[in-house]
Image 1 (cartoon, rainbow, N blue to C red):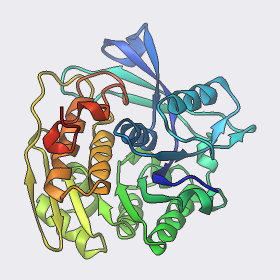
Image 2: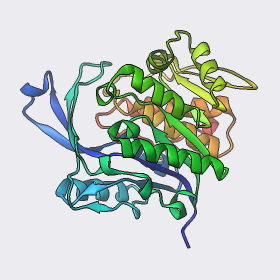
Image 3: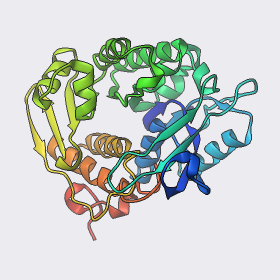
Image 4: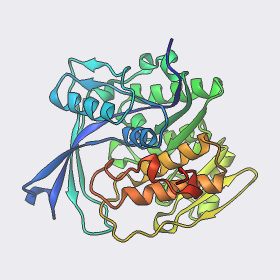
Length: 318
């Protein structure tokens, strides 16, 4: 019998070499090896907050694949349904050290990776339907046609089974043949989700609209039940058919690394909603978790554990 899960997610996770020294990648001399992947970031964030979560993907039969699996399992993420691909490699990436508050330069080496071979046949109903919630991103459908088919198949199956689904566009423009193709596909997928979680710049690019209120209205009209738009330091705006509002951001002393901030936000929001928090409180938790993540180098290093959650955000009372 498959063990019950709170959340299931899937996608590509790579080994990342993060530069120690600020400046262009070609000038960097030393790097730290870490795990990087939007969906696995969310999985780790949820696991640290006490949820039962499974991550599905494909990994190469190589040292990078073994490193990724070991790192995620050490965080309590269920990787039991991750097959090893003996014909394709695990992808990797290089990330620059950016000045405070700036986005780093990221260079991907992922073409033809094991994860790009994900397909609808990888939908294990016993694993997926054991979860209350599915989280997907717009990265996976950009990897290959078969990956795109799996994303839509999984979203439709989970919705049909009465599970909730969240969708973070998480744009990777260079992976798409054109911006128009990207917008068409991702807006279609957003309409299959319960909760849509774009950043403001992403929402503007995908919808052609400027105001966050209008972007939220666009996705509600296309089938979403709730929209949470990330506004950076200003916090987030949320909307449902019943109403909405803005929740202020959490000030931080120093912004060290912005990569993974949106994944941290998603982990905070999903955990809050699955625990029964109302939308304003769940958004406040998401903002707080995101703020912790940007204060350290590494996609996962700043993700907080449940014991650190403030009491007003559903954390333990001490």
